[in-house]
Length: 287
Ligand code: ZN
Image (cartoon, rainbow, N blue to C red):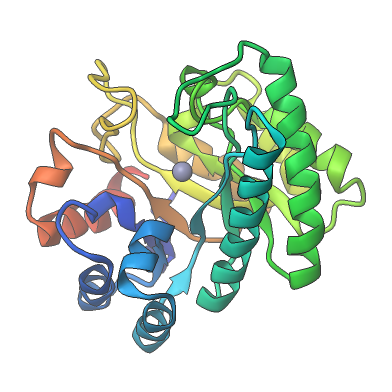
């Protein structure tokens, strides 16, 4: 694999969220000549939606995704209604920001208002995901906002997402958008799917239906000290990133490469400019 085009680098703002509030991150990306951004909704809310949209436009950044919608399962109708309403707001925010897609972390087992899991019915949770997603898709498709289902590593099946493989996400797309429209697709995050023996085949399957909406990169550290907040910088772990990028490329993906690193013990402790410089270098050398 030749080195990736440096202009395809995008930064998920979680990567520097400990260092900078969103307006500072936008300014830093512009300063570093980085062309893409993927912000989180809580940061957007804190900085103001319209103000953030203006700053991103002024900086000339491509919004490779808005993080995130989803979290469909809930123990009662009220909870599912709240998720339904919040997801529609997320679609509207993504439209205001000019995002290429709304990224969906679909949710795991149903939780009560206090965040306690109240059910062991995993199959039932997956049905709630399908129903909630189907309903949201109607709204988002009508509004012109693509939805990107992000399969999460199975270690998150209980508390974050019960869609855990590319095959599962592809099957949901087949069921809910059988014509292969451009409104429902996948966010491929290497942290979650690198281990999957079917990864290449499922990337090709998604590419054939134009469903590859986003590509998130980082690395898998050995050992991983924290399930959520110990992602590695590209090149520091065991994922063959050039190989997977080659599969994405061969499947027709032409979008940006979004660096998404939650790293409480390492990268969040460093100077933000050092993190962005390292992202640029490792994107070129190890992705
Ligand atoms: Zn991701």
